[in-house]
Each structure stands twice: as structure tokens, then as C-alpha cells.
Image (cartoon, rainbow, N blue to C red; front, side):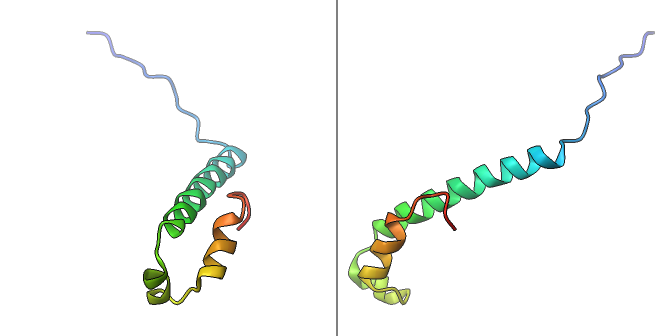
Length: 65
């Protein structure tokens, strides 16, 4: 019986891991800001944000925290 040898999987490099995390962060921000844009004034008041502040946040690019 022969044994099957699987290729050794190298751990991801720290730079690659950081890059992938940044992509996930950008995606999360984009999704969160899109959700914020869909809230009406009543829901914004419920979470303690006025419409002007929400509009300002929604207008920010996804790459800015």
C-alpha cells in the first residue's frame, strides 16, 4: 500500500494576512455605510445620530476609518 503525501501548506505571510484583513475592513465599512444610508430619521434618532451626521458618514470613502 502506498502512502499519499500531501503538499506542505505554508502559513500565510503576515503581509498577505494584513492585506486580506484590510480588504475585509473596507467591505465591512462599505456595507455598514450603505445600511446607514437606508435608515430613516426615526431610526437614526433611535441610535443617536442626526441626519446630517449620517449623511456625512455615508459620503465618506470606504477606505477611511
